[in-house]
Length: 138
Ligand code: T46
Image (cartoon, rainbow, N blue to C red):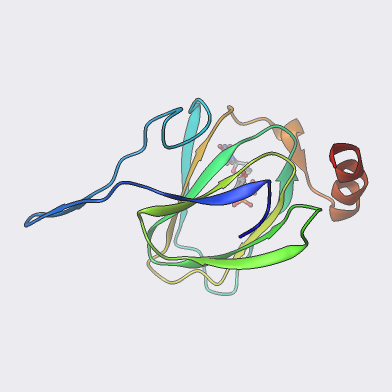
């Protein structure tokens, strides 16, 4: 992973005879103040989520259960595919990264911890618009 705009974040994993515990603290494990948490689940196998970029939103994405692909395009290093499958490893995504999620396992739960409240106008929904706008950022 060599993008300046997203990276894997490995969370602490505390293991004892009762199982595992991981935790996330704002501005420590994640480089932003947490304002919203949402999660995506029961995604039919052939469905795609995402397909947009955000202008200002910072996110930490974790496969809290099961697994799914995440395809990221930072407009700099090209389109890259990763599979998230461990609850103690997330991907931090900064603003202005095009993303698509697909190939969800039946038991997949995609946890999204983010820096802003929901704002419809933070979304860039057309890839051509993203490509035009990214030129101003790089
Ligand atoms: C992202 C991926 C991983 C709300 O009302 N509040 C919310 O906080 C969110 C996230 C969505 N919504 C509404 C807006 C739509 O009517 O829920 C509906 C589905 O949202 P959307 O089509 O944006 O869902 P995804 O899975 O394509 O994208 C979401 C996030 O929007 C996005 O930030 O990165 O999950």
